[in-house]
Image (tube, rainbow, N blue to C red; front, side, top):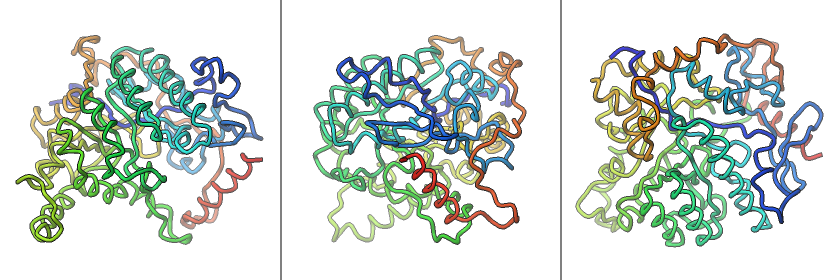
Length: 435
């Protein structure tokens, strides 16, 4: 296979919601209470219920030279337009040879965490539904065949959550962003039957639970003096503890058609996790009473859990141990790990030793099957390849944009940037936004 013949579908990207995302979708009785953007100094800040709940620009560094990654955009005018404008996003996808994309939220939190513990449940539910409508109607449906839509649901009300899954799955939404560990946010454990109505409606409607890194468990900073590089390195693997918890969770027996994804988790660490899980079961199940019905933990993982990678040559060399039928590719646009606009080249470097059949699985076929995504029914297959898409994007400027400005986290003395410095700058920005 040649690079230009690949078909790339990314199961983990991000949208920066435009300032008016919620306005037209909030119900009349909550008009004026919808999340909105205000200017605080130089910074564009999202407000919800008169509280600054997050500032924009964090990690929206796509299109910058790497030397300027440490300058986080303060507002929309310092971001590449493809981060928040749908037409420009499709242009950027074409320039990168990417056919399809699943976009996680930014302001709401990857799984809607900003809404889950808000005191007024009615306005929170309205905001979740408004977000879902914006994401489906204004973002995904604005470019038919190019996006895998993703929904949020309220965690505090299983009846409302079930209703939202039914409402949106009927319109072709087959992915739901969920926490990798909701217990860390004060909700019941995934082992609690509280969640059974949600698991059931997802299984019945082929809706995949997408658990993004950072939605529950988080990579810890080793110390304030630690280089920020150490934290960035550990970030994908931070979901490993949650992954082990999901393997032993009870929903797979109750709802055998249920699927979940470890979004942005990487794959290189998975062979050892599964080896260790099987070892644990062989050595300890006699006293722990774990029962996999004659199967091994690794069998459960490979049947139910979707994985994804950006650049992961070790994982791709050990794909049999990972599970090639459930591994998918991701771009992570517009975050700092994103390989735009050279994703086909960097991805192919890790794929070129594999058969065409396997390459097709991990680049698009697995994602299409698991997320009920059928772009070929809308766009002829020959127009979906890297080469064909790039041919439509000759007008797109892909050279790094210099000097866009932002909050400068770099050091002039050439010493490593530390976790403490980054956390202090984030805390300062939060404090300024709160004023």
